Length: 193
Image 1: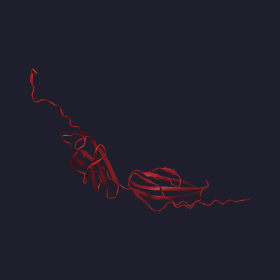
Image 2 (image 1 turned 180 degrees about the vertical axis):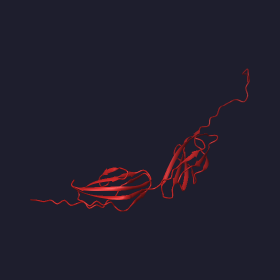
Image 3 (image 1 turned 180 degrees about the horizontal axis):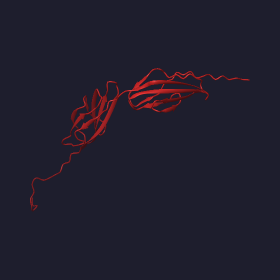
Image 4 (image 1 turned 30 degrees about the horizontal axis):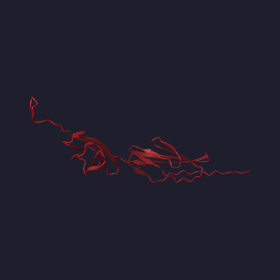
């Protein structure tokens, strides 16, 4: 008679807490003592469920989240571990700005940008041409600028919070081409010059 003793697995989530900005994809680490044929089942307090040793979980919203791990050897013996509040998702800033206009004429191409970002400690903006060339880099959120290129130009705002989280917002501003109309300044009614 051959008796095979299956070792009991020991599930263990790495105790190092994870702190990040939204949207954060976690590849949780485990330090389980298991056989090669072990199956891993991860879940979180968000309701996500994933299988595999290297499962990836996502956390899109601010808050604290718990992780749960079940490890099963040979489909028979299992062990569980939990890590309450193991993942902390920080509060992100929100990029926002208002353009003085969304379309301007080439004769008067000045745009005004007013920053309305929330929870941001650092704010700067760039203006790009339709071809993607950098036209202007503003070290602040509120600025005005004469756009020299016709077409759909892009204003991009970048904001950073004290906690390191970032956000970006893009808006287009159209610069209308300049047209000339020939209008004679003198003429004769009978057409004789």
